[in-house]
Amino acid sequence: MKIINLSLFILCTLLFSACTPTPPDTPAEFVDKQFKNADTQLSLLLTDALAANRNPRTIDAEGEYHWVRQGFDWTEGFFPGTSWFLFDITKNDKWKASAEKFQATYQDHKYLTGFHDLGFIFNCSYGNGYKSTKNEAFKDVLITASDSLITRFNPTVGSIMSWDVDHGWQSERGWKFPVIIDNMMNLEMLFEASIITGDSKYKDVAIAHADTTLKNHFREDYSCYHVVDYDPETGAVR
Image (cartoon, rainbow, N blue to C red):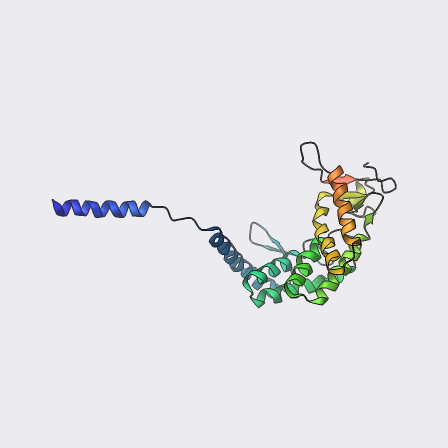
């Protein structure tokens, strides 16, 4: 009987032990796992991107890559920017090399004044690269891109114009000075440009744009319009 009772006790102990939940990760452990997973997944992407010699844009449900469009693509700064983040975390030079290689493919776009996307293209990549390395060449790219971006600012409207309306599908909408909510993502680069140059003109544009957005883009329930069109001569919402 004692042997049976002992066996039952051991069996119950094992069963209860098996049912005991695994302690949850601490916040630090959770974050560490996510970065390790990101490093693993993006290493696979990097291998394929290097083989194709193309800057990756996205991947579809079938696993097929879509690469950054030739000429200009508003997503072109995202993979280099992600590479800089992983370099900061892992200190693995392969991510520094990845960021530098792919951001170099569009460096000349810093001169383009026909797009509002320059802020998140260049701040994601060259901006994070400058923070990580203090490379003066990266700083110069960031300043030039900021100079290009603020040419789209209309002081009467108080905003940076999102899309040109004299060509493409945007010319078919009847807009005069369209501003989209996404444009807010460009402002961080302008604040950074003021910090690294000591010139307030960049942040002044950013603040004016943010104030105008706050005034006109939000509904009473705090949802927002995607596009607000302005009269460039009067600054009034059309």
